[in-house]
Length: 154
Image 1 (cartoon, helix red, strand yellow):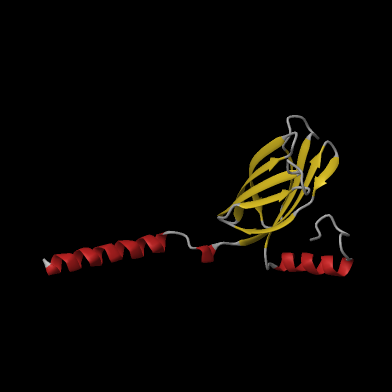
Image 2: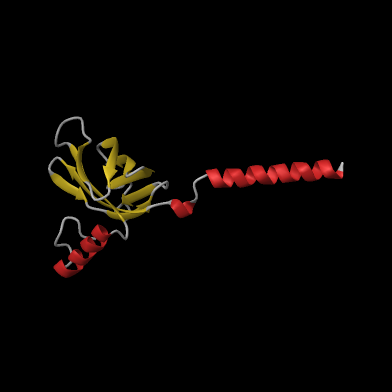
C-alpha cells in the first residue's frame, strides 16, 4: 500500500512537471509598444502610447472628471504568432464602436477603417518590440526632437 501511494504521488508530480513545461510562462511574454491614433470623421480623438505584452489584455480609457461616459475605451489583445503578432482591437466611443482582428509585424504601421463608412472611425496603429534597436531609435529620436513633435512621440 505504501509503495502504491508513492507511485501515485510520483506519477502526479510527473504530470504536473509536464504540464508546467508545456504551458507558456509569463517569462516568455514579449513586451510591446503601441502607438495609436483614433480619428472620428476626420477629427483626432485620441493618441495613446501604450506598453503591453503578448498574452495579456491591454486596456486604455480616457474619461473627463465627472463625465458619465469615457471619451474612448481601447482594448488590445496581442498574441505572438511566429514572426508576427495577432492583435484583437476593440474601440468604443460614446457614439460608435469598432472591432478588428489583424496581424502585424514588428515595426509595422497599419491604418484601419472601423466605421460602417470610410472616414467615420479610423485607427492608425504602430507596433514595436520593446528594447529592439528600432524602438530605442524611436525613443532617442523623440528625446532629441522635443516633446510632441512627432505623431508617434510618447
